[in-house]
Length: 254
Image (tube, rainbow, N blue to C red):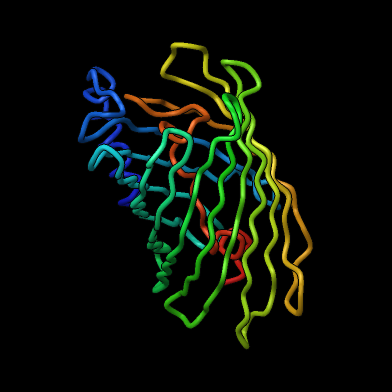
């Protein structure tokens, strides 16, 4: 089993201590965690598994740290990603900061990393908007720029919708293309429950000299929310994961 997936399972087993605590967003230390397991079909119709843990820590009254551990299966190999977000939330309606991530493909001498900035802003009681942008590189000589945005909306107290757009520019002699992906995700969690379900629909491809025709993918999964995390508002909502190399890895292009 991939080491990152082992770590996710170990933390999930220890996580009930967080759910049983009486932490509030003003307390210092771990405020909550969000764990998800799912599967997404690739363009060949094969289901690819994924697991994701997001852990939120209050460092001061207005500063926080978010840690991410992710694993996803691709034709290029199982991939593990570790990410760290340092952010400031001067008001309940907004938070912004910097993030760094490092990914490794199992069974290959291939590692990649990215640095960027991000922000999450409330547009009302049931809506927020998020944006991220940055740069990155892979160990085998591939550089890239990326940017993305998402709109989160609470349709009902139990149901939320996220619409997102992500762009990645690869401009190297071996690969010149612009990756573009749009996605919709529905999250269902009964009011007062820790568990939830999600369904996603994404469509994307690569354009340019080394373009690849677009494909559509469907994903399904379950979530477990612990402590003070989740929802639409920036104070409790984690920053969404961004992985600029995923469009290449899941197509076996790099």
